[in-house]
Length: 410
Picture 1 (cartoon, rainbow, N blue to C red):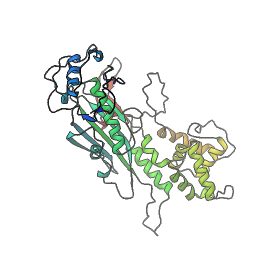
Picture 2 (cartoon, rainbow, N blue to C red; picture 1 turned 90 degrees about the vertical axis):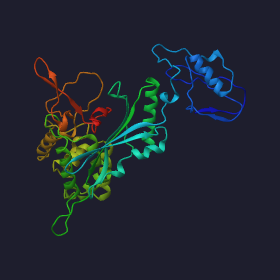
Picture 3 (tube, one colour; picture 1 turned 30 degrees about the vertical axis):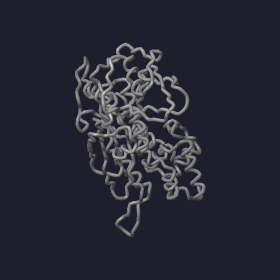
Picture 4 (cartoon, helix red, strand yellow; picture 1 turned 60 degrees about the vertical axis):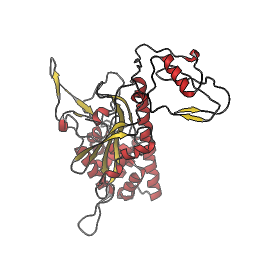
């Protein structure tokens, strides 16, 4: 819509950029609203003609003072072109949903053929959280979400994309509308689709009832089994187990850390006795250092919280300064505890892949969050080289900070 304001004579105002070409803004005396998309086509043959017809539509004299020069390579606008071919009111939107369940991963695709893309309320229909049946005693969490604009006939690849982690219509519409407008500004007249991808999983953070005497497992035991389940479902192309960044996050919440410490009896012994307030303070320290991933490694390796206390207070270990077998210590059990940490830590620190265009040397024990791009993670051969074969791999979108669009829509 053109906004027409009260007061004063018609005069040029701040230029509006469209394809990096300045244009005039118009002010009229009378309050009115002029639709940009009209029922009848506006016939134009050049930029001057476009301004002339627009000025006639608004009821003001045309002036060549504000004519624009068409940049090289811009598509010529002929008499047969309608406004709706430049700025469609409805588009095709595809909703992709993936859910990692307890035993299997399910996928679903839903198409909206006449999606009104410029209205925020329309995006409520593209939210998938309420449609997922979460297992009993499990909490749902988002592993990955992205939206992209695909110009399928021409590029067959993502052109404009955004990743986000807020599950609401306002956030989704903000990124989607921005991507659509950016695409139309660069590639007018080209058909496109909006692709929305949601990747969900669930985690159990409540004690499991045992069959005998009404007892329950500890949160540490539950957390250990859940992390193991996550690792079993995210093996990379070499068969190495790891836990993705978004899968690990639910275990790092301060309430989870504090509850594990509150249940741990090793923090209430003759040599180390912490009150509940002191345990909460230690949990906060673990959050601020940070040493939350080290906390998760200790739980997964079956180490008591007294060991974590020793690591942090004696050795100043954290997520940035991890235990090493060369670290000396006067506490006899320490060497064995550090060995367990060293055996486990590669799975908790998969390589962070970034588009920095630099050479990286990989250590032998490092885990790459890559998987085979063929169906069901099978090998997809691209060709042969002088000394071997080349296979296509994808980056785990739940771990990487890149777009993840290709992997998400795979």
